[in-house]
Image (cartoon, rainbow, N blue to C red; front, side, top):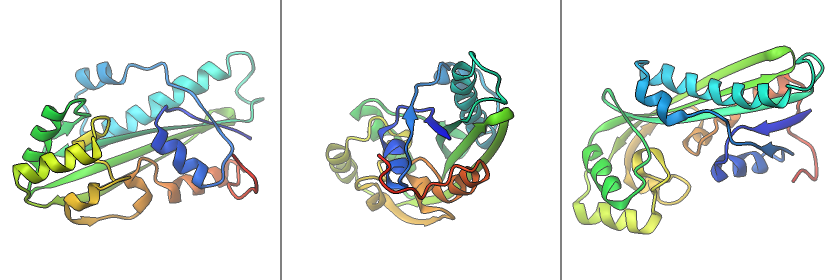
Length: 206
């Protein structure tokens, strides 16, 4: 079974390496930002649709030369959104925007929504969404700027990076799968890969 991660995220790729998987990566040919701008979907449905479109883009492109029933390809698409009230917070891309986002979130609850879509032979598809309820600490402006200077979370939705010191911003959270904080809910993903017969327990995977 050949596994492709439909993402260029180094964080998700590292999660798969930690599972011991052999896999390739491919950037989806899908304009995520344009889709978000036009979408009227609720945040959970939007996250699910984005994960699905990313997986479908890569899967259909890779099987053009052979019938879907003949390929042993499995493609993993993923998406992660931060939702504050009814507002979806994207990636800040700058220190100024990161300060604005984190300032709005101080002392408030928000949701971290992580979706995956896995496509395989015969267009068989499995989807899963994990929602983490997070309450942020009430921090000062100086504390927020110190965090941003340290972690530089400019490519992270919501302006925090759990791979580093992001948890220091959190007062409490309710979570089912801790790995979803990084970008892939690995418990659910393992269940799905086992259904495809792609057992992630091989030795020597790189």
